Length: 170
Image (tube, rainbow, N blue to C red; front, side, top):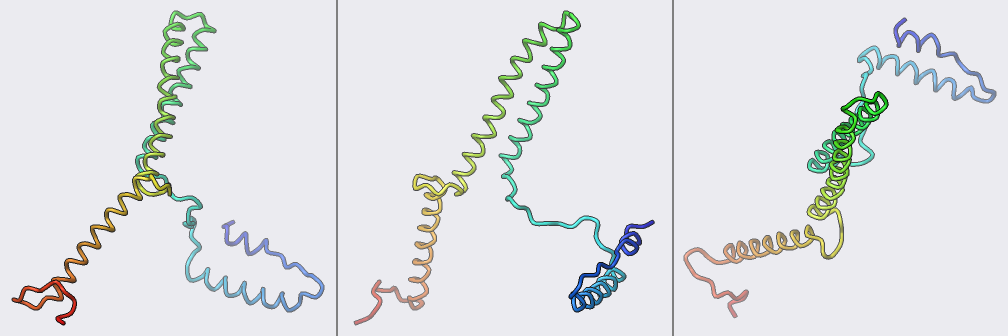
């Protein structure tokens, strides 16, 4: 049985006292929905807007790197444990390398944190007066104002005559 057929057969009407008006409206709505379904099949995957914005590329790269390093460290620690239980000669080198991998995994997590903080500060997410992004925006605004001002002065001056730099000729 197809999903659509299952929905049609399993939709049993529910009767509630005093809901006769709602039932007729529901019937009309179902008829309209079935007409729409006949025209175009319902999509299997519906895009929904994300609740949180996507992570920045450098932060996401650091996070993926940290997850891979941590998973390899956990696998290595498990192998070291099993080698220790088995009494293998490989146990001691695996334990030493697991300790080193733990240090590297800690570095990976700290890298994610630092990368996220730096990205937030540079791209204006942090609204602190000492923020680098705020100063960069201020400099860009200042440059735009001076560029606009110079184009206004050039537009005001008649062609071929140098201006006096005053707004009025009085």
